[in-house]
Length: 158
Ligand code: RBF
Image 1 (cartoon, rainbow, N blue to C red):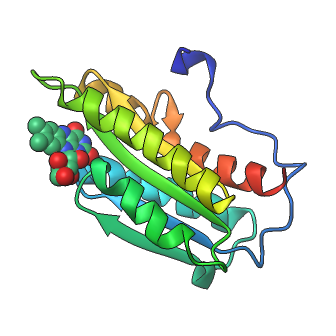
Image 2: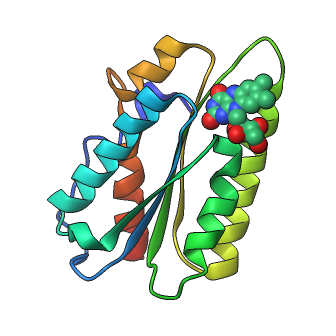
């Protein structure tokens, strides 16, 4: 599943539903902050561009990506929340911490989405190097924050 073959930062918005009354919760990991700020900015800009109202976008920070799951649950449990977008960057180090975090987040966000029956988007950039991460937060592989927002909109139209 090479990212270079799947770049949703260019997408067809002609089928998007009206999101002007939809509420979006963003959960953004503070770890690798410079990178996750860019993911957040891409997601917010995309939601606004497609008609979301600024006051309907709720941005919440969590310490690290591992906390995305609980952050998502705390937002998703509110009935008026339509979709939750989780953003983080996990870069592989010398140990296997990244594996544990990534699997826990993937499993956790899947569970939250199914529990509350609403889109909970996995906007976790998982890379071997800092450069690979930079390429995916507004670099040559697009901005995965943009793609996460697009996914939320698409799933709301499902
Ligand atoms: N959080 C991230 O969002 N990205 C990382 O690359 C990252 N690396 C970590 C490496 C180690 C060794 C540890 C212990 C934590 C790391 N975290 C990272 C933080 C993690 O997601 C979580 O916030 C903390 O483990 C506290 O639960």
